[in-house]
Image (cartoon, rainbow, N blue to C red; front, top):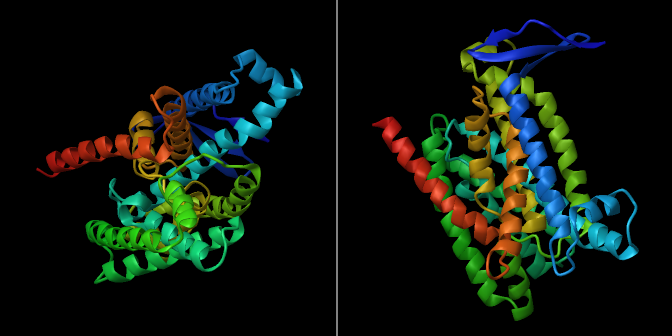
Length: 354
């Protein structure tokens, strides 16, 4: 039987309710619930807009009617076959990237740590390029190549940064260096391959939702879901790490193992997303911090980060496709916005340290 405790309690200065489900107790913070509801509503509104905008425009009531199985046959075709896979890809893969960013920032305890800053997106892109050049452009092989590239890049960065314990700043600096090397290698490969392959890889490498169809999205969900389930099991031990390694160890957690699993899950999520839409920047970097600041939680909430990531990627795609004078890949918009966010974050970090 599930019931909420009537009296509100205080948890580190945050108002919450305790939801009891048998032997389990789940703290529900009021501000977090309001924030989550607001982002869910915003995502729903943007989704209806994404399904209605285009060369064949549909009014919101026509979109809802088509989603419910009514309306004209052409309306249903436009909604389900042409536009829904793209909108769902933005929501699902934006959530994957945001969760990966939250995991990396939790492990390093640095708001600048994200897969794109650390070079994992470039590593996944390198793995995908090698797969396309030497094997084929089929989605399963591209996904395998991207995941393998991301894992090898993560192992390289971790090995170079692991000297007497991994420090967040050292990890970021080494990651930036590895990212620059991989970006140069990717550019060299694009110059050496055939023109058709280079055009395909260049468009994909900018980060784009163009051409996303149901099969690769379904495959991404099938790969990402087990990772999310494993993360749900790992979450209680993640929260123990917030108390410090000594307290976490005393309460039964193993910090080294937990952090390693968190990084592996993060690499898997960002690699799967990269295999479908390319190395989209900014989402993994900003979404966790935006979620924390809006909800004022004492840690990076994975659920709120996922909702913010889905909102940011979907909003960026709408901006790239329907607001700017010319349609652009979504990665161009996220890089532009992400550059401003990165500068603002660096200034804030410098002021905080001063």
